[in-house]
Amino acid sequence: MGIGERIRRAIEARNLSLKEAAKTCDISYSSLQNWVGGLREPRPDALVAIGSQLGISIDWLLTGDGRMFRVEGEVQASSEAYADSARERAVMALFRLLPDEDQREIEFVIAGKKRLLDIERRLNDLSAVMADGKSSI
Image 1 (cartoon, one colour):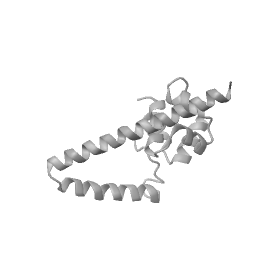
Image 2 (spheres, one colour):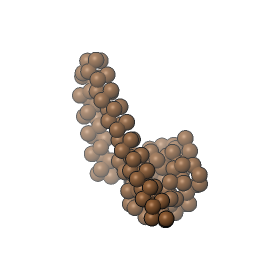
Image 3 (cartoon, one colour):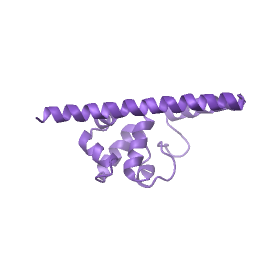
């Protein structure tokens, strides 16, 4: 997985569209599109902006190794990351108590929701591209 794919995953992990991520990180939308599309490599200052604004580890962005989410000092995680992991542990504990058939049904629903979110993100990206194209005419 290249750096562009890791940037896309980081944006998706924060449930942002490319346009929203560009605005949040103060990066041009077209630059972000080029990086995610593998057409260009991001500048170091852009990686720092993505890391700091989205709470993503720079090491992970560069190499894909380690944790995606930034951890302050290895001991103290951000309150948001801690809340997510506690919630995830609770959900997984409940999930493991369910019979296999119910687990498969939940997996199916989650996969469907993920597909819908991907379609929505792509539609938002296409809408932004269309709007950019109309404004340049």
